[in-house]
Length: 148
Image 1 (spheres, one colour):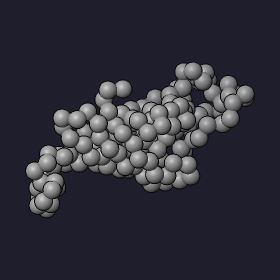
Image 2 (image 1 turned 60 degrees about the vertical axis):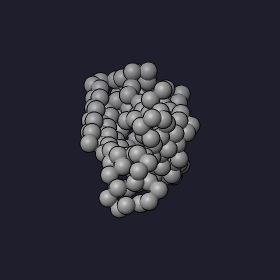
Image 3 (image 1 turned 30 degrees about the vertical axis):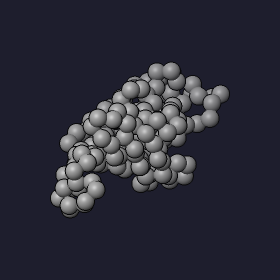
């Protein structure tokens, strides 16, 4: 079981290039500790708190339920939940006069999903759902690899 918590709190006016962006995925390829239903550089702010929780079941569930094809295959199942709070202060928003206003998550954003993979293959198949703030990319199928 792993839990990562990260916080970035800016004071005063923060220029756009110094704001914290939520780590999103590029199309369908991603990494651990990223938000799978959010695109790269899609959500950013100067007050950002993120939490990533991951639990690796390995092949415990397949063996527990004695699923014939999976119990001896060593295919691992990983469950994850990501959460974020994102805001931009009014001082920092003055720098954004030429840009569209980015999404803010003043109520926490949640997504959850699972991935399936094998320890010898550096790829995992991921299935992720947005739990709130629905709209674009409510469900995402992706590939996770540490090779990026």
